[in-house]
Length: 124
Image 1 (tube, one colour):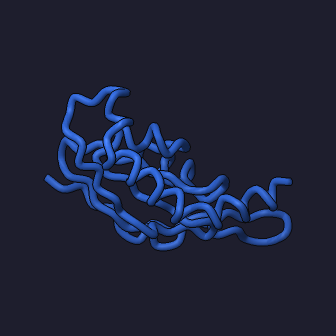
Image 2 (tube, rainbow, N blue to C red):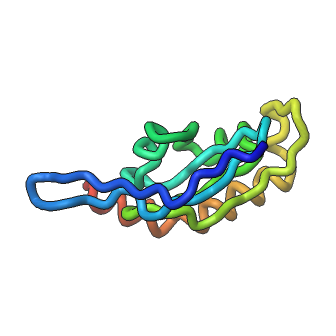
């Protein structure tokens, strides 16, 4: 069975106007699959979690735990990548030495680094 999430959009009203937290987020999850979502601070991960799915904030943890990682952009968030993690289970911390683990981690970081920098500028 496939669990499908299609075009999830969420906005919040604030004193200064509306904030669009999620913009047409779509993905699927296969039966028995453990999917992690990662993205910059304040991109809508927790909002999506409250709607449907398990969220991680740490790339290493997501790569170690997840069968797939859905990478989100900054606000308004959307899924910019769906990365499979083909490491067999059971997994242990020793898998962090495998090239697929380190390659995936750096690929994700390359996708997110500009969004992370922008979100840090907003916070600071």
